[in-house]
Amino acid sequence: MIQPHGGTLVSKIIPEKEKQLILEDLHLYPFLEVDEDALMDVENIATGVFSPLKGFMVEEELLSVAHSMQLPDGTVWSIPILLQFREKPSVSAGDRVLLKDSQGVFRAVMDIKEIYKIDLPKVARLVWGTDSEEHPGVKHFYSKGEWCVGGEVWLLKEADIPFRDWILNPEDTRRIFEYRGWKTIVGFQTRNAPHRAHEYLQRLGLEIGDGLFINPVLGWKKSDDFSSETVLKAYQLLINNYYPRNRVILSGLATSMRYAGPREAVFHAIIRKNFGCTHFVVGRDHAGVGNFYDPYAAHRIFDSLPGDIGIEIIKVSAVFYCSLCECMASDKSCGHSKEHRIYVSMTEIRKALRNGKLPPQYILRPDIAELLMKSYQVTGAR
Image (cartoon, rainbow, N blue to C red):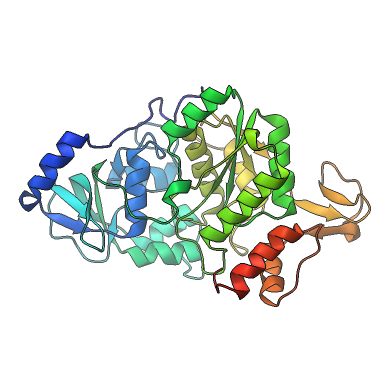
């Protein structure tokens, strides 16, 4: 089994007996109220999804990651994991505090190492390559605030996030992979429902590996992306009806999209390595948005990292439908000219579905199209 990033799978879950002691002495601790994004990050730290991180980043870690894509010890890491506030919290470095949700339920313990203020536009330029609020990831980052609290965390109680039953942690997936005898596992990142180009890439993964791990993002996404419920139902339909079910695992990833393009591609690869994947698919404009990134920057970044991340990257060029080949293909498998190519656009798919039109079945399977259309027209969901 592939080693977790940094060599050790982090586990920061408070034992049951210790939990009871903490709950009996809640009055002894100061507390901070945090949002759902932060609670999901706590859980990802505590269960090893974000290994080797053990907490929210202090300033030295943030600056090292932002400037050089590595932690201070040299381990490659590309996205800051921060606990942000719009106002300076009324706690101090050295405090042990409880983190609670908006309903007042205590979810985690944190040992505060540092409280510091960041230059939001400067960090945005380093990480996202832009400080424009037209970028949804940057806008979301700004909304969190300029004050950061860094320090180790321990999980007290899982957050009440939707689709809990769909989420496996790295210990779960590694046991499943071992039980099934999989030696090579291909990870697939997605935030959207599957169209035929996605299916092309996933079938490529099934050809390469013993198993395929489809891991859709269930956290915050931009407003016009499909809802997590819709994405999960669409993938369940695809797996149950078209894939060899004993060779595919579907599990949600409870974290927000950053839309950080190439840096997020590295982040996504590291996460899937922690789940136990040996390979990771990176397609055209991975984790990109609009025209903020060159479509193949997410391929090139893996050739310029400050160190080896220990997972094999499957770089795939743009996938399209060729009217002469009469199938999905890429530049590497199709020799026909561009006028015969129809590129798949999820934006156009969503637009058609909102207008009550089913896209061509060579773009989107009819049963999946009907499910997605129903999510618009019947429930009003995305």
